[in-house]
Figure 1 (cartoon, rainbow, N blue to C red):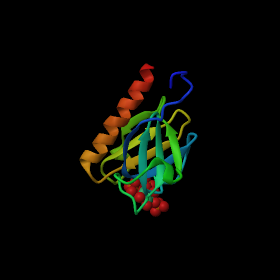
Figure 2: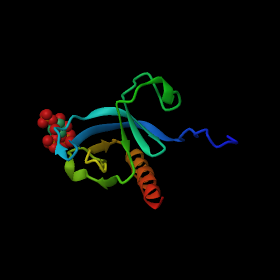
Figure 3: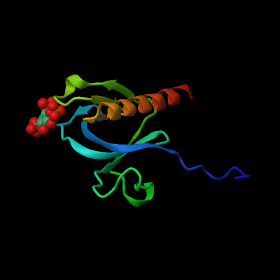
Length: 128
Ligand code: I3S
């Protein structure tokens, strides 16, 4: 806006269905509990929603469901973690606050795209 007071809406960069389990909270290990999660990358945040069975990437809108949780990607670390699960295509996301998540897809291209996209956001934030 001309007076500079209006905040821009963060861009929705990527959304999709992944399997997710939280494995640590504030550095404390948690028991694994894998569940499908609707994962949305908006600006600097990765936002998790409960699996919305009726929704697809093309019909999902940010306003119409309440997030389960969200992760600040600033300072986060990403690494492949196939040794941490019997599932294939697993990576680990660790936040600065010591929350750790495993994310997984049966589809190689899906998990690779998520990994690369998240890594580029994390890298971009580090350069700011
Ligand atoms: O690394 P773990 O402990 O073998 O992970 C498995 C368990 O958490 C298991 O739960 P219970 O121990 O409550 O039965 C989960 O059902 C499995 O999915 C976990 O292993 P994978 O390999 O799927 O990440």
